[in-house]
Length: 142
Image (tube, rainbow, N blue to C red):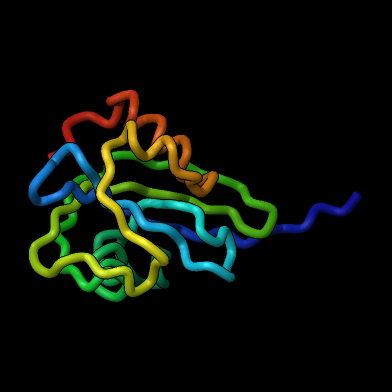
């Protein structure tokens, strides 16, 4: 049996509370037609060579949501192996400084409580993170 090496990518994600309800956080549904199509995830994306996590997260949210972020502390880190890809996922708390989120790089956007997120089909890499959020084990979210 031959093992196929998969590429590894570092992905940063933002836990962005709503402006009117800090108990709800922004989640996005992936676009149809691509990998993990129509599954839900926390906003963010891949860290490019030479980029810090914080810079990548601000860039991705600018490009995909049309918002400017203030990126705070790291809340969680995990690793997930898909058949085609290994993802190193890092979650940061973030605040919107300007703009209203638009689904420029997503099929849909919603603000949901952690409990409400459990009814959505999330990407496998995000599930352990969601479980920690629901259980209240991420610490202070500010």
